[in-house]
Length: 372
Image (cartoon, rainbow, N blue to C red; front, side):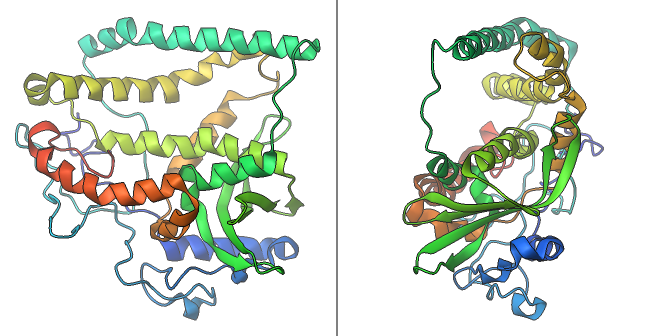
């Protein structure tokens, strides 16, 4: 149970990967592909960058720390006049999560549930999830066959715009590295993912050194993308970004959700609705991480997946995504003028943390506002 000190999410959330560490990795990995990434030092942040000290001394050319910039911790701090509850002490159970943040790794599927909770999940959640998977897969299979027969055509896609939307209007925005001006004076935002996990044509897993995507902030369209020594077209970049979104990036959110749940017996009695939601979160983490790869043979039999796709490559991608942690992203606010998603989230976050601190003790003891 989470009350046990041996539970991976018993304490506070692990620290984020710091700005300095991320930028250092970008520069180091780009040095292996100088021909493609010789301009990496042209990207800069607006008056900020480091969690720690001046990054100029590291030769990164990324500016100095901005006053009030968030650090690499995921522990909430003071917002305006309201001090967010920092104690993380259970009022109706014995465990506390006020342990200092550490540099650790995330884990997606590790919580204990009772046999009764498992039966509840299998009979009342499992069939619905299975039905959605089955009907969605059959629909996709039919559409695929109709498309191959020429009866229907895929919708026309503007891939440069799609890539821009993936970078600016989703969680991929945390990989924002800085801006530069092109020859025409246009502002170009650079998104860099170090140690990028991918799957090769033969189904094997590979970690690439660096993926970068350039977005024109005025048009919100992709103007360039690179993967190690390769220049990418917009449709290729879209495929890579989407795979990353639903694999290595997606599991980070599921891993963090382990700090947003409480299934202690006292919690289940006092707030059964919140407790039941915790059970559902836990079982979906189990369904996603531990059981989804078992669907591969069915996908292949339905013609939805190539025969040489290896389920272990997907698992390796998930594990890599969690071990790679979440990058510190205080500079993301620089993109707010260009992104509805970021603008909304940055404005909402302090209010949410303030309100959450007021109800946490009664409704969400032991839960972490950042995980919510």
